[in-house]
Structures are given as C-alpha cells and as structure tokens.
Image (cartoon, rainbow, N blue to C red):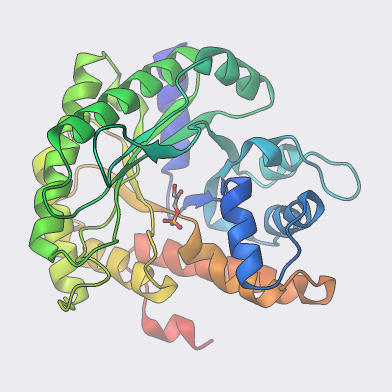
Length: 340
Ligand code: 13P
C-alpha cells in the first residue's frame, strides 16, 4: 500500500474539529448495555440502534470516522442501504474493530491478552473490500498488586505491533489501542507510571516491527486514578499528567492521538479533553481528539430505550455529545454547552 494513501486517511481522520465515533461494541457488550436498559438483545435491535446512529442528522459535522463491528459493517438500514454507504455519504470514513477480544493470559492471574492475529491478513482484505479504511485493536492492561507484569505488557505490545503491520500492508490505517483500564484503587501517579511504561513498550514494538508511525493513530486512556481511589483530581491535574506522559512516550511523527473514554462520564470526558487543549495546545506535536464510545453514545442509548418514538431525541443527544467533544478538541467547550 502506498504510504501517501495511508497518510492521507490518517490526516482525514484527524482533520479540523472532528473526532472518531467508536460504535464497535461486540455483540456481547452491546447486549450487556441493552440488557441494563431493558432493550431486547436481538440482531434486529442492534441493527435498529446502529441505524439510528449512522442516520443522525449532522453527525458528519463532528465525526470523521466511525469504528464498526463485524456484524454492523455488513448491515443496512430498513430501506436496504448499507450503513457503510450512509457513512461515506455523510463524509464519515468507515473503520472496523479487528481484534477478537481480550482473554485471561495463561499463567498471569488478573491479566489479559488480546486475540485475533490468526487469519488477520485475509480478514483485513475482506474488510477493505467492504469499505473499511482503518482498523482498531484493543489491548487491556490492568493495574493491581504486582500487576501489570512485564510479560503482559510485552505480549500485548508485540501483538499490537503485528496487527499494525498487517493493517498497513492491507491499506488500512491502524488504530493502536493499549488501554490501561480504570478498574482498581490505584492513584493518578500509578496510572501515569503504568501508562508511561506501556506506551514505551508499544512504541518500541512498533519500531521493531517496522510499522510506519506516520500512518497510524494511537488510542490511549487518559491518565486517571482508579475508579475506586479516594483521589479526585481536577481537570488541570489530569491534563498535566496525561500530556506529560504522552510528550515523553509518543513520537512527534504520529499524526494523531484519539482518546477512549473508559467509563468516565460524558461531561468529564469533554471537560478533560478541553483542558488538555487550553493548557497544552501550543506544545502538542500531534492532533489530540476523541474516539469515545460510551461518553458519546450512553445518553442517546438511555433516551432511545429501543422505541421508535424516541429515535429523534436519541439522535439529538448523540450529535450533542459529538458537538461537545468537537468543541473540546478546539479548546472551546464549556459547561454551558450542557444546558442548551
Ligand atoms: P469507551 O469510550 O466506552 O471506553 O470505548 C472506546 C473503545 O473503543 C473501547 O475499545
């Protein structure tokens, strides 16, 4: 694949005030979210929900790329138009989650390794033919007593690098997602330490595997204390810890960093992204944006409840969150945006 084509896709994904929408929940995760709200857990309801998202008026004003799941990339609206074609019509580049989930890592209690390298080359070719131009692979790193282990960090970093190489070969921009999860009671400082170690390992592996770092996007966690921690740092402290960590670990040649939300509330995720831009906008060499799932979708899902009469309200809530995060990318978000 021509490097210039991959660079141009990465550039388009990171353009202007836009970010990415992660709508790639696996069937199990999507069903879990539906079950919490009493929505039927069937293929048709998952299709209806994704139909609502891709057809939300104005979504393309704020979203440059949408990450889909295997089931979704093949689905269509009620009138038979493929979701992929609707996205493209709205200026949104289709992407695809290609990992096959994180499983317990044998011999390392409490740690996980992500699967999905077998047959990846062939799957990527098929996804390219379905219209995908970028891909995503998520590795999960957990903080706890004596974890993460070096073995877990290295195994996940190498797997991410092998995946990224397959993607670039197949003409898809890899989104490399090493997520240090919020579960646990660790401090902000401990999250900073682990995220730094993980990112060093990931970029070292990418380098060793000859991945072109100008043709990829990093999807990291923000540096945050564990959700069970008593520490409640403000947005300033979080912005400083996060950007300092990235300045030390992420090469300036990487075109973009797009955050996962990881269980933060939608408002906090927007506020923190905004603060990173207002405090550090001048010194960041990469584009810094969002690739949220829950922090963009959750309010819309709660409004929808699986009912057709709620579709318009749900679409408005979805586009509102996309607009808030787009403003945050420009350092122009304020809590007043939440009251309109
Ligand atoms: P959240 O924003 O809900 O963390 O999801 C992002 C994602 O794509 C996880 O892989």
